[in-house]
Image 1 (spheres, protein in one colour):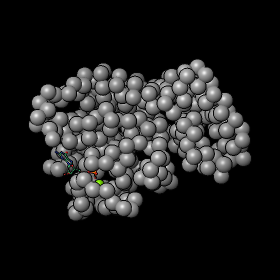
Image 2 (cartoon, protein in one colour; image 1 turned 180 degrees about the vertical axis):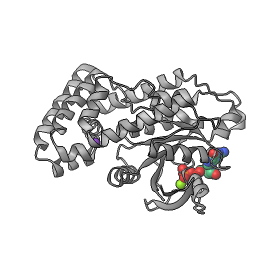
Image 3 (cartoon, protein in one colour; image 1 turned 30 degrees about the horizontal axis):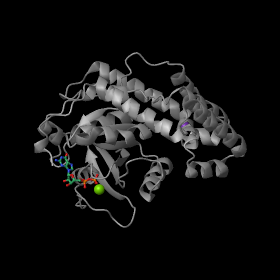
Image 4 (cartoon, protein in one colour; image 1 turned 90 degrees about the vertical axis):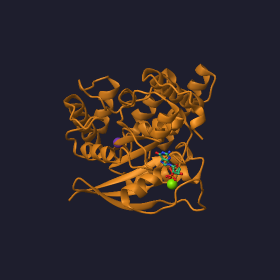
Length: 327
Ligand code: GDP
Ligand code: MG
Ligand code: K
């Protein structure tokens, strides 16, 4: 039997522990509370002949490392590299929740999104083409209600198939050959990327994409100045083989542009090129500031919200007007 390591990541109160309890049979406390310690609970589940180790991580709104929770989640993802990340999203507050998703995308993970609280959005009369949204984010988006277990089987089915790169069921439970091919190719790209990161990233940069690749790893475009900076920093990072094989150089470059202290420490402790990397970074930061009259962090954040806004619009997102049914 194969064991798949899964991590639950999402904003506070989006339903992570409810999924954890439902899938693993645990009885962890759900609801509005904040613990004094930052830690993760581990549980086990079985689906379709596979075993799962499930880690319920603390809730975070972002991965900017402003809080112990954010640092903890980042470390857990980077150091323990789960096979698949389940990004739980409170679909009744989708725009804000997708911000974390855009940061997870930078980390280049195998990921699936649970559009949880789907019952609430239905009560309110929200509308969204979640298949389209998934396509735009390059991540399968599955409507779920973890209080009743709706969508959980499909979610795990998709995780298994992502892990194995095999077939795929659509939301009606039928095998959609085009989506199956998309998943398979996406998976191949991912496997390839683990071995040949640099080559892989160049593939994406030059726009080479498989024909039916519905779930491809996307790059969120942060605008010409930030992207130029990312490219310049990546060029130096890629000369460090250890770093390149352990981390997504794009993610590290973005974090360096945000002047992220943890990432700076990582660079200092793991390369002999720290000085060169910081000087390229400092120049990029200054260029962004000069051209946009904003600091890098703001430009990056605005670009991510711009991407979310555009994707929601393209997926026909509309909030229902039956607001009284939602507490
Ligand atoms: P966490 O902070 O992400 O671990 O979220 P919890 O699992 O503790 O859930 C927060 C609250 O939302 C709890 O009161 C849950 O019962 C409730 N909840 C979780 N999932 C759903 C869902 O899909 N629909 C509805 N209506 N409530 C949910
Ligand atoms: Mg919880
Ligand atoms: K990598």
